[in-house]
Image (cartoon, rainbow over all chains, first blue to last red; front, side, top):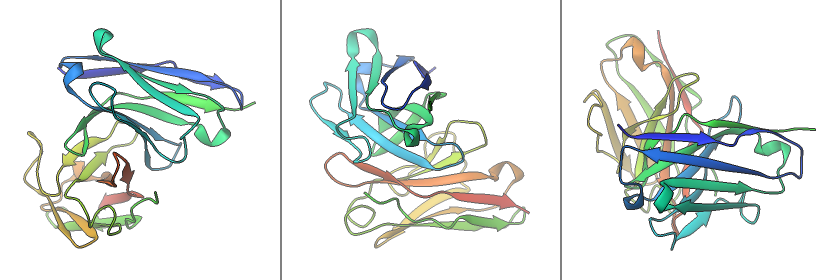
Length: 117
Length: 110
């Protein structure tokens, strides 16, 4: 069974940093491109970042470019999102997502990040 | 990248059909056949319903169908059932490994 479990969310002050992790199981992680997607409370989905299987291709939404860094460790079946210079508008549930043919076929359960003083 | 435009709400009675539009530009929806649709129930993670404009993942009922014309993609849910009541989002590839989601549509089964 495909599973992805995010961790690392929590309360952080504006300007602070947080590192999210996503542990994948049930599939060959190294064979799949991956994404991070977020959803602010009561709002819609927002694509944040994409990483290819070998990390050779990485892209970011303009809203997080220069502040967030995506990475992966195929040996550990893990995906990461380093989030720096956090703002109140970054408050959201962050989803780890398995990329599939231009979309996402599996999602984690999400981890909540709250940016507040 | 601007979000794709979806109607905020749509509704239909059980057994009826409802169609949700997803309007983008010639740089995203109009340029690529990488449009996906997701269903999200409250408090749950989204679920893939359609990928590559018209394809259904295994396990998704054939009541769900997708199409595209120009810069607008559409999701049709036929034979509406109570469990179809949810939020629906479209997404599209938008060049250079960038992606964009739609604004979301709340479907109500009357």
